[in-house]
Image 1 (cartoon, one colour):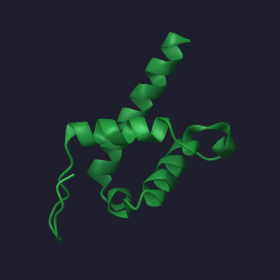
Image 2: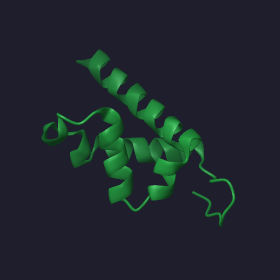
Image 3: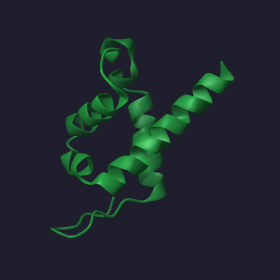
Image 4: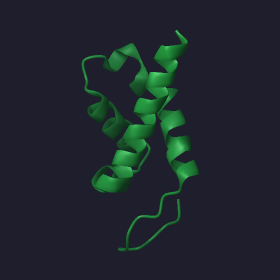
Length: 79
């Protein structure tokens, strides 16, 4: 991710892919957090990674959330 100071957050498609993959392999994707919504899990993951700014940027957050949902869908189709 390209750092910006006060400007719009720059996030690439590969950044989104990497974050979604990291989320899918994190404890936030496991049964421990089964009673949390997907949004709460992703928010917790991003905050835990020190990426609070991504939780506050609606466009970036939506990109990551949509990629996570795509990964979940692909995982369920394989099962």
